[in-house]
Image (cartoon, rainbow, N blue to C red; front, side, top):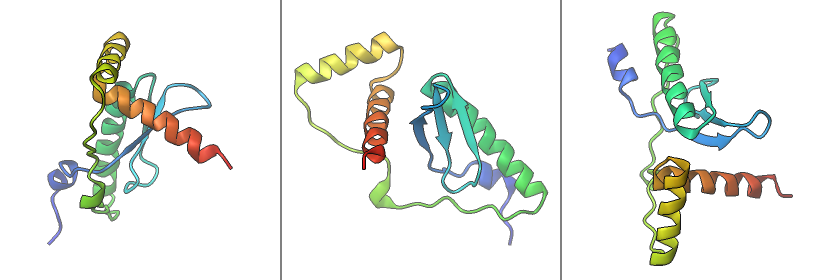
Length: 123
């Protein structure tokens, strides 16, 4: 039995956020949905654009009867990390995030993405 369009639209597809080093801003990609990306000047804008792109990608694939992959789920990589840090560092993170107009989670995700991007470019 074929899944409904709604079930695909409501599925939780993992995505990655990375800085766009060529044009500035951010790029959001869905590893499970080939060529489905979003972009934006901020992380929030890029994610919002990606969610729209995901919805349109799924609708078009469904209408054209193109196979839509299931989201890959791996509990080992659930997107959550619990981390203990000194209170002073926590304060600096919260203050920096407020100054940027984002949540502490978004701010830390951005910093980690930058660091991982730099690390992957190193020989």
